Length: 195
Ligand code: FE
View 1 (cartoon, protein in one colour):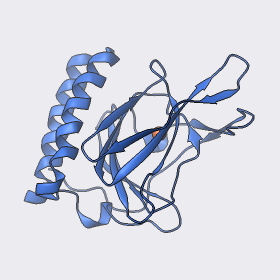
View 2 (cartoon, helix red, strand yellow; view 1 turned 90 degrees about the horizontal axis):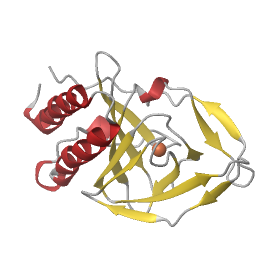
View 3 (cartoon, protein in one colour; view 1 turned 45 degrees about the vertical axis):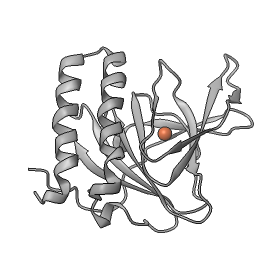
View 4 (cartoon, helix red, strand yellow; view 1 turned 60 degrees about the vertical axis):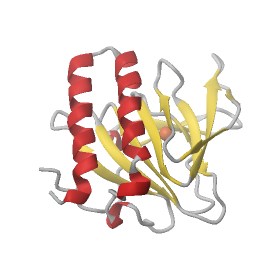
């Protein structure tokens, strides 16, 4: 393992301990995981710990690079790289998730789904470097994320309670609420060696 990856390795070690101790208590995972992720993304200015392959563009779409997958699939860590103007569809996760902004700014729009399936957008939230937000089926699982900067790349680190690239989940038509099943996969890059 290179020294550059030490902050990520420490995060994975600490996050593994939190997930093991919390069991199915999602509130503990979200609270303690958010604190750990806040430290990881807050230290980047001085340490620049994310290697280039996971901080670069992935072509026409935003990059989603797998950084770590727990051996039991209990959680995963992914870097998202947003060119100016790039945005996700409105989507869900079906598992808990934490989003921490590493560089730049992200715009997060939460959605509520009514019993009749229709979606209502909540107030947009701007997250700056070092800030963390959470999603899950219990606290609100549907959102749309985009780069809040029009002239710079933004990068965020996401942590999910599953191997998120393999999870069957949904995108939504924001007008009708119609759901489409999707599996995101990951952008093409070798997983970093944290051993
Ligand atoms: Fe998301």
